[in-house]
Image 1 (spheres, rainbow, N blue to C red):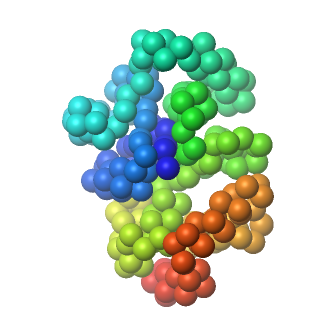
Image 2 (image 1 turned 120 degrees about the horizontal axis):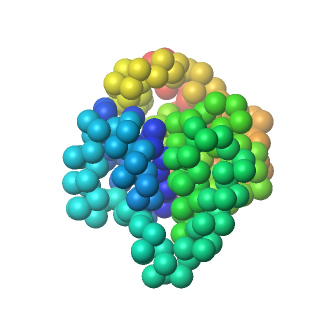
Image 3 (image 1 turned 60 degrees about the horizontal axis):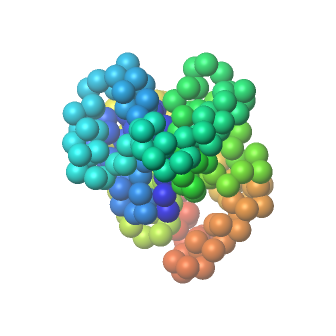
Length: 218
């Protein structure tokens, strides 16, 4: 999968030194828009900038600039996507606006954002008829666990590490319940449920067994 990253998700993974999870999980590419690097992270993530820049330099993160978007002849499309998303979200969601617009422009299937407030991009995208699938850091950890790239203990430890380093005060049990509701019990979009069914079949996931094992630790 390919993913466009929002500011807060970048900060949360990097503060816990778990950014490699992003590169391993989204093996088809991880992308950011230049303004997220040059303005959003300058204001909110100075302590991780050197690490982000090193990963951009190493090719782990692809940073899209206006010049590159113009060279690809998609800059006008990107501008229109930005304007459309600005109408949906508040001024405080500018990082998310750019991240969503970039995903829509370059065809990234996923948006990684930890902005889960009501009316925010994460909740809204789950209800829109849109090709973009939003994930927060807990979603990614659970998905990594389900496909077998981490065991239950490591999954809980990594959640606690991100939660602690970013002072999020999230409760993992609640995130697991929301995840199950989203993909199985009461999905916002039928497409999400179908996507999960395909993932389960492709990876031969014993869903009940997996969640039972995880529940014992949380």
